[in-house]
Image (tube, rainbow, N blue to C red):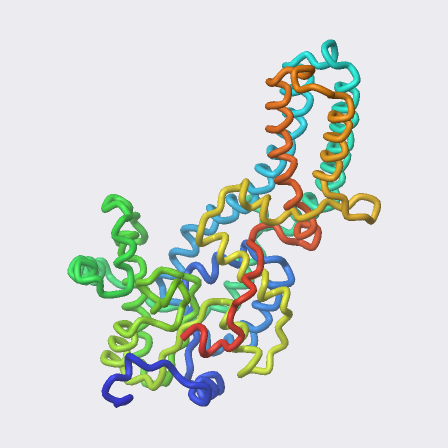
Amino acid sequence: MRKLFKGFYTPNASEAEFIWSDRNTIFIFDTNALLNFYSYEQDTRNELFDFLEVIKDRVWLPHQVALEYQMRRLEIIARERDTFHKIDRFFDRINEDISIKLIDELNIKSRLPELAKELESFSKKINALIIKFRTEVLERQQELKPDVISHDSIRERFDLIFQDNIGKPFSNDELIDIYSEGVTRYEDKIPPGYKDRSKSELDEYIYSGCSYKKEFGDLIIWKQIIDMAKSPDVNSVVFITDEKKEDWWYQIRKKMIGPLQALQTEIYKETNIEHFKMYDTKSFLEAASVYANVKINKSSLEDILSVNKVNYEHFSIENETTDHFNTIKNDGNNILISDIFNEYIKVINSRVNEKDVVDISVLQKINAVKGVVDGLDDVGGSMGSGKILGVADEKNSDTDPDVSKG
């Protein structure tokens, strides 16, 4: 039955071992797998690049992937660097909330001079921690991020690894045929790409005389993968993508099990390959540690997991900072900003015996600032270790690379 319904089966452990050891296995990378390099910590990038060097005679990029990478690279770099500016502005707002909204706007100096002194002292402590964080963490992290203006060391590494391993582009006539087929496929929800139907029909660009419609980008990539798999020198195809949508992966309760049956059935029908395997970057490295005897640091896997989740869910800067700044270090001790604030609250309570002594608007402003300060309890320690973008580790992530990810 397995032979008749091959699309319903994913390679087992022994087959996966064969795939990784076979010299006729081709490792193909998706656009997002490349662009995510700009969000990883330096150590994570180095581990990934080192392994790509090991298998560089078996790696390959569809032309569409290489083109999308070049088209989106600067946008991703700018977004990464803009994160630092947003964090800076976030910190600036904290001081403004204390010094302007509380002290100046409410005229606390004249109405409650003792409280004003405590607020000013509190503001100085907060500012000292922020300055320390900016100089010891943010500035160092900015130096590690590629700059749009300067040379791009990440692209330089990709150039060396993939220089002779990029597929040919489709002609404009071939693209038109794919778009026509894509309309029918998407209506019938035939993967991949039908989840991109929401992209505007006007969302297209011209490159080298050909018109590229973004809603069919995944389908173009898939067609180029199939064309590559038709080569007599290819026995197995491994596709590494950080795409999470259900038009690529079979999912149960949002857990990725493996590539969709329809994808596997199509590639087996159109080619003579023995095996088709899909990984996300994290499970790809996990599999490399098992089948290629590559040492992978746990911190790299955690970094990849964090980056993938953030980039997929498009977290706002407020969530990014809240998820990553756990503590801010001061003189070697982990001091929570809310601890300082809570001490300040105790001072207020010691001076206020009845609610009506302090205007209700003052209390409202104080509570508003407390909400901001509480958020800072989730800011700091991770950044100190080199993390800017990401989310907390998922405790229940799978450890078996060939069970969890197809």
